[in-house]
Image (cartoon, rainbow, N blue to C red):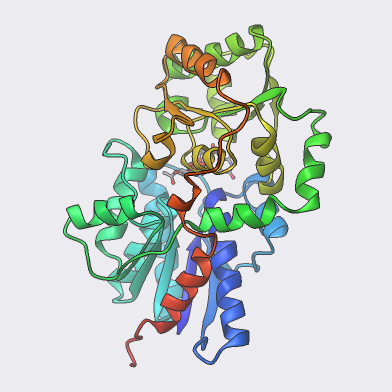
Length: 370
Ligand code: UD1
């Protein structure tokens, strides 16, 4: 089984790290693991803090190719990946292309493969927000439609696929981000990371905003920043790692930010440490709202819908849109909660062994030669 893994964005490096390690272990320890995996980096994320740092912290092996596509419109990114990846696929002829999540790199990777009749496997299949105006929702729906193997992190995700008539090749494996989180949160470096920010556990909130729907609309962006500033006046420290897109939009829209502790985007280890010890998370990131839930930290999500409805079930995550008053009120309610959750709902995301299961299923999948 020759697998070509296509990644390009920050969260994909996290997800791929655990599956890649599981594939390597399978190859070393069993006879079914006759597998060769190579990694293609599309280059969608290229800053050190959004890309290389993840490879270093998570021991993800160096990509054999970097397509260097960089930033651009959706069509530019998707089109460039299609063109450049096609050449790699034609020379390598892998049995299968493995893609992750819902970014432009995901869809372009899947599309380039299926056009050459190469099978596609999708990790994080079946997630739906129901909002087709989100680029990510379009990427998810289309990628799932052309995948032969669909690895669902939750039962809800498999249900969503069944509703769209997709039942073949579907496996509920659990969530690979949970696997990664379980390993990293135990590491010494993770517990030391907090001190590096000059923070004490539970005295601060962490905020992130990077979704195009929020950053590219000055009214929404201003409203979100105003809410974070209000939290500071309520006596909470707010740490704000700023994505480059957000930083640019704040400047373009002439929005000044007062009182927040603004920091550069951080690596995975630092983000887990910050989340684990925060009193509150305020975010529009899909991954972070789930990590908050898994680490028992209350969360307010700056969107109207979520592809992780499980996190809403016991109120540890609340949807607040991008309206200042709603956000502040939601945060105030979340801050009244007990300091930590009881961890009872974690098994909704698997047992922390999703990557092993995915590696086994990949190796057992018939190739065109079988
Ligand atoms: C992308 C994904 C989003 C995912 C996020 C993870 C799509 C449509 N969106 O959003 O689903 O949650 O990655 O972080 O694929 N930029 C830099 N340096 C970089 C990368 C980006 O400065 O290394 C800036 C550029 O101005 C760029 C902007 O950020 O135009 C947006 O980057 P892009 O990759 O298009 O989307 P993200 O917002 O990162």
